[in-house]
Image 1 (cartoon, rainbow, N blue to C red):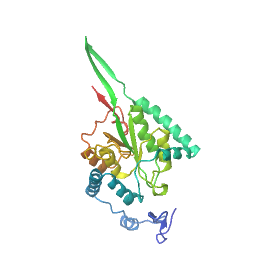
Image 2 (cartoon, one colour):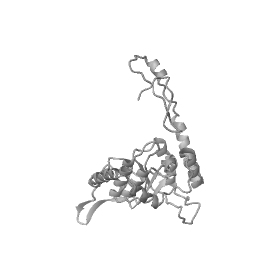
Image 3 (cartoon, rainbow, N blue to C red):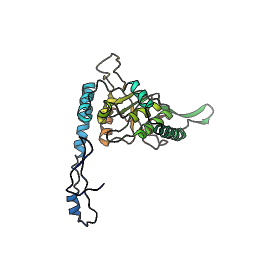
Image 4 (cartoon, rainbow, N blue to C red):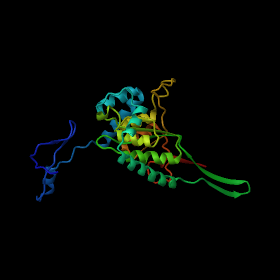
Length: 280
């Protein structure tokens, strides 16, 4: 679509405004182009890192109260609890468009074939009588997987996160994706349906740096309570996202969970890289 510079703003929702400028047929200098299409004013990396650090510290200290406040601030939703009910996962799958379901199932099948082929083999090397050195690949027991959301829907990110972890043999998989105001505070139904197709039942409606913090610290924080409640989830030793999270989120998470698990050379993508760790 093209509009003249003086055309009214094109609004697609109450929160997003687009202004399009038609420069066809014009030969403008660099200065004129910059004036016609100014770049957004971005925060410095230091500012972004400080905000992420503040979010993580708030989640660590205040737990669900902080998560609830960030859901209202960033996503415009009021949450009773971020855990997605099992009924919502079932409903999303039951109401998924058949054509979309077929496409997701085919994507899952192909991703699983490739992930299975990537899985490293254990090694036993006999050095002499009674001397054998072995390398065994042992999966991480639990991982947190983050699926971006908001203005777009990424069921492919669910597949690219979950399938390699399953192929690696990870026993416990938790998934988080931002809550959506249009869907009663739950992630997009297609995201939930993709998770259900893969058998993932631990799904949280949490977005951004607060999701990384929730994965890293667990809820409630183990140091603050010994009581297990339905609202409790355990922390994870490894967190993955595809597309990868921002550098500030990763750096801040690393400050909570040290040391970061080593990356295996046998797994080229960032999702399954740390899903299996070698034990010699």
